[in-house]
Length: 134
Ligand code: HEM
Image 1 (cartoon, rainbow, N blue to C red):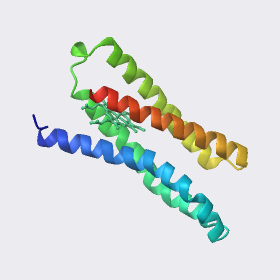
Image 2: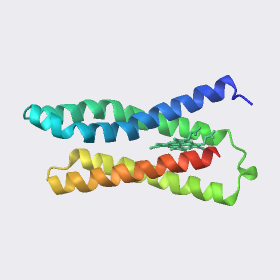
Image 3: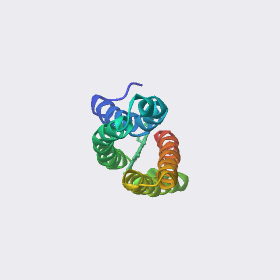
Image 4: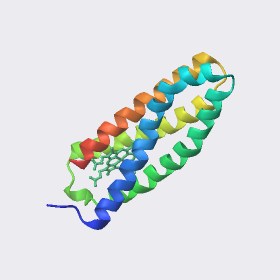
């Protein structure tokens, strides 16, 4: 059975924002060596440009995520589904906080650690989203 128009709209927005938030991190990380070679300040200009896209995408994920949850009847979801949702929401908070700390970090060590936490938590969130969709 095909999804309804509104479901297509809701899930397309959620998945598009996930593609920007998660995929964008990997695309940027893959380009960093070339950007560094291109000159001083190029990599940080690209990172700032990505931040202007990724934070609106994160906000859209939270808004469409709440919309997703509202389409489920909680009494009809399994305990496992609720646990995955709870873990996913915790990781969404961790990804947001670690991305913020990554953006503000000055030392290469802190930049690496917080960037790694953001990437790992974001991939786990993605997999949990797929699990919730069933
Ligand atoms: C970094 C943030 C997030 C990412 C990367 C993400 C990613 C995803 C992905 C890839 C799916 C699968 C879509 C599909 O296969 O149709 C999904 C589904 C879902 N997400 Fe998220 N999500 C995020 C945030 C949230 C938040 C904050 C909530 C709740 C407030 C949420 C609730 C859900 C629900 C309930 C589904 C199942 C939707 C359905 O089947 O109708 N997500 N998510």
